[in-house]
Length: 222
Image (cartoon, rainbow, N blue to C red):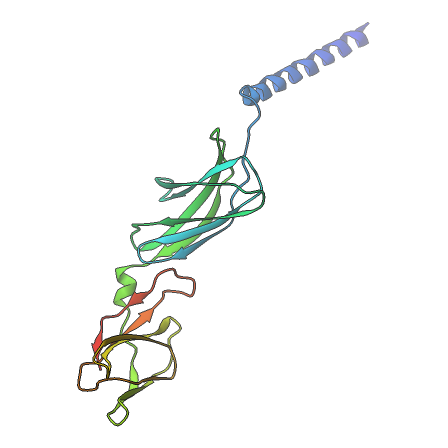
């Protein structure tokens, strides 16, 4: 008899514990199961002039209707509508009017009911006046004007990984204004110049190889 009472007591304890666990579980599912959309994948941030380009992929989840990009610890955000295809899609968003500095971005996807994915993070940098102030016209070793064939030959000093090249403004022998871009090289040769008129150039720079904007120095007279 004692053994039976002990087993009954133990069973009651187990039943009580199960009921308590069920009550705790019910608290979390009372509004139904949690729904998540497919998360953003391969988020990348490309820096620009007081702006960035955020780029990511979204899966084949057909319920996705929009994405949101958050920054400044979630205080600022940008909504991006999505027209979903049957496969994986690339989504891009420009975040403008950013002060120069480094930012952490978090991207979420959303369905029509407002359910969202787990966030995906990426870090990027916006450039501005501070970067611009570090730039100077690309230095040259010699610059020779040849009146015989109306040409200019410039030999540069070294190469700068951030320099794309130089942009020239001059009057041609046809007496028309010309703009000419010369990619970075050891030597730049320009012909058809009216050497009696002013010739000026400026240098073009990018903060890194993936930057979306180009920075320019002021024009200098040759």
